[in-house]
Length: 211
Length: 212
Image (cartoon, rainbow over all chains, first blue to last red):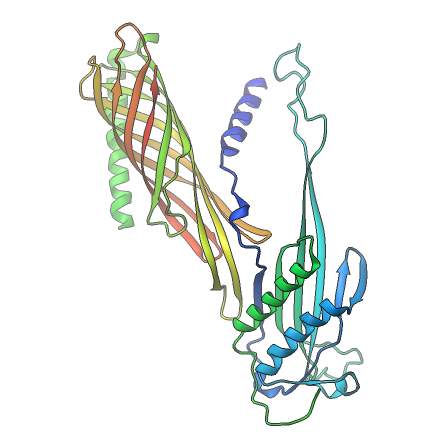
């Protein structure tokens, strides 16, 4: 049994010889993932509704973030949508919008608690094993910024409860910094990148109006 | 190309088994003076994988061998190595509809182990050049880190590695000596991460260490 444990531990030791990666080399910019429904033609949509707040999901609490910093992110997204030919409608006109955009912010603090100890007796009967007398905690803060575009013109098939298909999905994530202003700048850069890598989000709009 | 490499690997394997096992009969009696241990630091450069192709010195090699004849030695080995490479921020098309923009820190870890054999060209001299080969299994884990995320793939493959080297024994009455070797290896491991696919892994490198 002891010999088997020795081989097992030797295997664990060798596999753990992989050199740790220096994550400091990675860019602070958020990673930007996009996906879309390629069965739709974005040119069929002319107008959109974008609320003046960002859904803030912190843990189990949900709130609406609508201060000056939040508005700067919303303004950046609206500017990109306008650049792609879409017309923004006001809250009063939202029932007439072709698509809706929802922005969601998810700040998280992740903690990894680890500790390891060898079994008692492994080193001999006189040895009581060794251990970390304290939990080793690695903690880091992250942020995820989501943009979801839903088709408000979709036929719900006569069902009472509307099911709106998401036709464009953007998930950006990365480390969260102590300064909210820095985090907001990272979100704005990520939003711009999402549009840059989604050239299909575009319409030819000849109508006037909107906000 | 892969067929040629696999064919060569098969021939090397047959060659090593033939010449490593046949002489055992004539030197079957255990003699501790013929047992040796090698501990090396190694430099390693993956070639042709397209995943991580950057030389690094994050690895070690351990061998235990026995001189079954003055010319032939047979034993076991295990070594490990990590190669890393930073990939600049870029947009990757994951599928016809999916795209991902990120930079990446890639890490390729390998852990081969198995049998090793060598043919000493000048036994009993201070400088003992040799040709040898290793074969066995290899565990490989390729990882890519991006943002707060990471993906990895790992697996097992067949491993073969011809090498040439020099064992230096400068002290007449001391077992301690020095070891220099250059090697090539090929393993059949297959891993796939994001768009980085490795189907067969080759490396070139060298080792510096001690023998006693």
